Length: 431
Image (cartoon, rainbow, N blue to C red; front, top):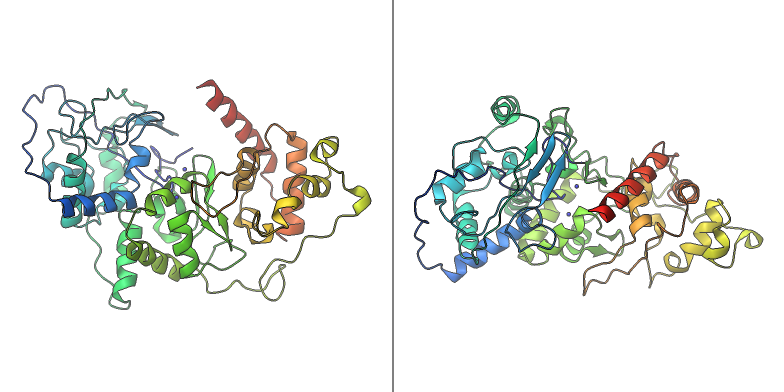
């Protein structure tokens, strides 16, 4: 568990976020004195920070953990995540707990400036003072690391954020729902607060605010699709609490596949969180999704039918032979079937949400880049095919998988997503 909408959606997502207010150069007071940190409080804060995915946004590529500097590209410019280590000059070493809580609850920096909502305080406002205190103790117990953060490159003036807040931001904690039990309410508190699932999995309007009437209807993050987590879920196999718990803690579930994109980082962090909290999130999220999918073109049982057989005389012996063809079926048989028709190597593609999602974005990026689950994960390793397939072949393969395996209507965005993926690869290589 993300181009980002309105100043960025973190999620990575799901996906993570950060303070983007720069520290005032005129604030020269000494670092705040810190009492010796209680190990239990530090551990609690570490677990909560993992659920919040803080390290993802606050760690630059090749940089020190939580030392900031990661660029977050948005339609409104680029913001750079701030340093969350206790360095007194470039980090939070001079922050007080009350200033930290104000930033988290109200989106106001230590210097009094409005924080851009790339930092999802619209979710963090729901976090209790006690939990924020534990996170603060954890962050200030880390090694102080000096990091010079680049200036934000935003073309929207910061004072405009106050107008955005007046329109869309509602501060305050969440009251428990008496219609549900303690575990469900805990899951809701975490999913809608620290985990900020909606930052990625909810559509945003033109100004980047989440659309509450479409909560968890699905969104986009860093070129990837964050699928719907409600009744609109495109998953061919219904998510259960057990499935979700396994997926969130390991990054892989045999009924749904491996976490990729920004979601991979989310599951890496949740692997370190208390299992009870991860399961509570799963309970809440599962309650938002249908218990079973309605019968459709996948068959009366709601499960995908096997892919149409490929005539043997039309199947090349290798991908090299398939390279001369734009026949999606032939490419599938040569490049994909060897793993995905053997359960011990890859999940059957009929279970993949990438084939039934509303966009081809995830299928294209997985095919381009492959997947490599973290060490110890039960998920298989898939090579990328960006260098082996032309755009026409990639489109033919996507079309075949969508219609014959996903049993869904054709996508209209395949060529566009392939072009985006190629451009992203070029930009990454050039950076």
